[in-house]
Each structure stands twice: as structure tokens, then as C-alpha cells.
Image (tube, rainbow, N blue to C red; front, side):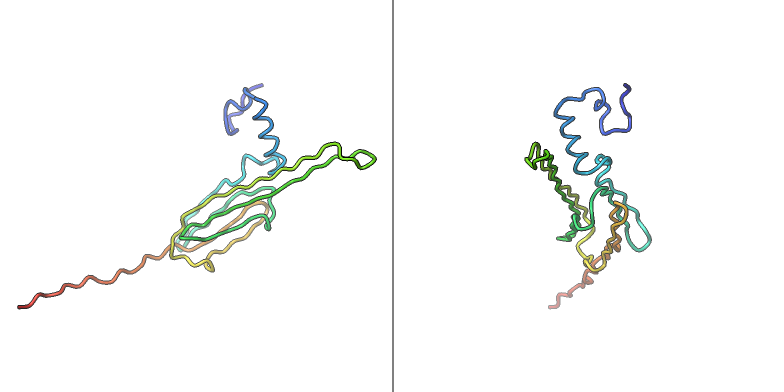
Length: 148
């Protein structure tokens, strides 16, 4: 078996330690087969603003939260998953619970009102559009003459 050059680590295929298998198995159960692509981000600049795209495969719109505070836009997503296996009598033979959350923050500027940020979620991709921050006009400096 050859190592994958496109994975998160070149050694993942060579060194499949038990804790690594467990961790990736939980990630796969929570975030789906594209777990390694979760929260990958593209930022594009346009003439009048920016477009931010964040990959959130396996999430639903109600599992995503957006917060704007002190010029920082924080994107967080969380989900839980319960699995239970039952025998014919309904006795629980095996039961597991998985829960995970992800978050990223981006500084977009302190002078951008939240109503100017447009957000949509389609096909596992969160798209945010927001204007460029307008510079604050500083008062003009005036010289005071000393008389006498």
C-alpha cells in the first residue's frame, strides 16, 4: 500500500495506530466521508466587498451559528450522533454517542453592521458576503495660533 500524498499527513497510511483509527472513525461518523474537508475556507475580494465560503459537509443549517463581536465573525458548527443496536427483545447491546463542534473566527472590521452581512447555506457550503470596511474619517487637525 502506497501512502497518500493528498491526505492530512503522509504517514497516516503507514502508521495506523489504534488511537488514530479511533479518532478518524469518530470524525467519519460525525462529519461524514469528507471529514478532512470540514471548515476549509476560500476568501474572494470583489470591488465592493468580500465573499467567504466555508465547507461544512454533513451539517444542516440549524447546526451552524454565526456571531459578530468586536469586528470578529465567528462561525461555529456542532452536531451530535447517537447509535444504538438492539437485539430482538429490545435490550440494548451496544450504544454510543458522538458529539463534536468546530469553530473559526475571522476579523472583518469593527465598522460592518451585521445587517450588511448576507449568509446562505447550500449543498454543504456556507457563503457569506460582506462589504469592505470603510475607513473612519478622523477630524481635521487645526493649528492654534498663540497670541501675545
